[in-house]
Image 1 (tube, one colour):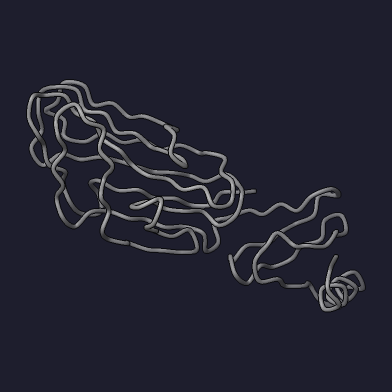
Image 2: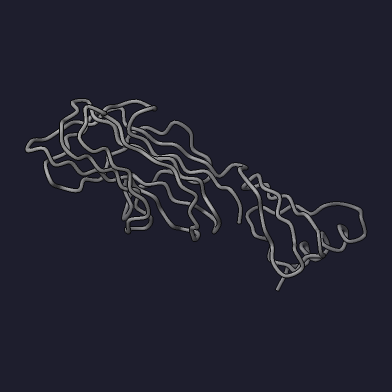
Length: 195
């Protein structure tokens, strides 16, 4: 049930007096076909299609994290990349706790994900970089038989509010390798596309 302020804003908008604003959507009220509501929290405009609210991005929901410290990746072990630097953080943010070194998204929708693993000491065997969504594999990039020292990918993925993304790496060469540091190397970027 909508509160009195929400109902008043909706009535004013329907009368053409103002477009309502909200602070974190989607709106909790039923809209009028084609109605738009600006979301001051996410920087998005929600629109009503006659049966549901939709939003188009990117707005404020975008984050990118990378490494400033190299990390050793053991042989034949899937290892989560330890991100320690936030390049930019909107409302999709880096978090710890049960999902360390991850970016968690605040609203359901489609997100553009860009991810990579990069090696300071490339090897001649198989390197794999995995994108995990809430603990399960969502995408995989493969660098087979280097000297190429980089593997990465991008994808548009549907996510629920609270889903999180992580990057994991695997290598099989008989010894440990180290990740390369800095923004263009091992990184994870998440940007809201649409609901």
